[in-house]
Image (cartoon, rainbow, N blue to C red):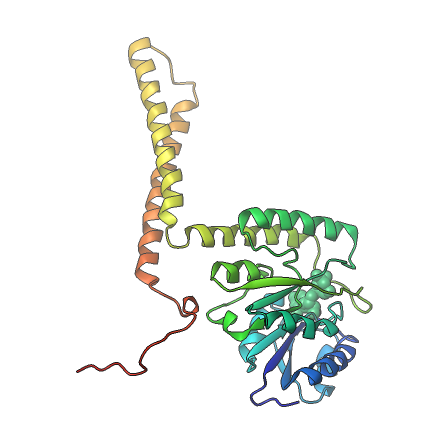
Length: 315
Ligand code: UDP
Ligand code: MG
């Protein structure tokens, strides 16, 4: 196992995966040895069981140790940032992803893709999870259009350039395909094996449904309005101002010319609040736009290649 300048980096986030790391390590090693030079990076996401001790027993692995539990995305992020390989493989530390699928994924990557995502088409999880995943997939296809069936499958292979300027936090790992597609990377998917969890238990409950939805909204906004927030806030703000001016004018006419009593009515309040909210939104949009226009020119991840003379004459 060459670790100085390996071709492949395998990144595995682990949180309380006692009993799982050793068998998984053996499986990965067996598969990767056939592929080329590689390094294995375990990110111990603040495990409180024996995972840390078990990791230290493994030979020639890089271990990134978190001070406490910061979540799977942060762990993946730290692992990828520690990776030296030209290609990155990510997979779960509980043994549900099958390392035997890795060569197949690289075979696909070789066809000219930047990312190949695993699709657990035969998922070994309970029906509620599968049902929620299917709902989430439909919502994602409308909101963020990532064009992958399974955003929750960690088993993926990447060209390392995909991670340029990509900071993952919270539970954003599920949004990686959406972000990368938006950034212009070539993404595809491949059916992979999924195995039941034998040791330990899942780290996620129902709360991830809500969090996943919020993350999706954030990505939807980023994709659509990242460079022009004024268009969103301004449209809603102006509509509110327009509607409230209409309402308030109508009330003024009713009161002045028809003697309509407003003292016990809610409408003047509704009109005023809508007007103020509209102004607020409009101003927020302008401020957001100003901030962004001052910040974003171009980013490193936008550039695929640069061609031309290496040195530009300044004479
Ligand atoms: N994980 C992590 N930090 C967390 C939660 C999970 O590093 O806060 C790791 C976990 O150890 C596993 C992977 O992320 O290797 C996926 O977690 P899990 O198997 O619980 O997710 P599920 O398969 O149930 O979706
Ligand atoms: Mg799992």
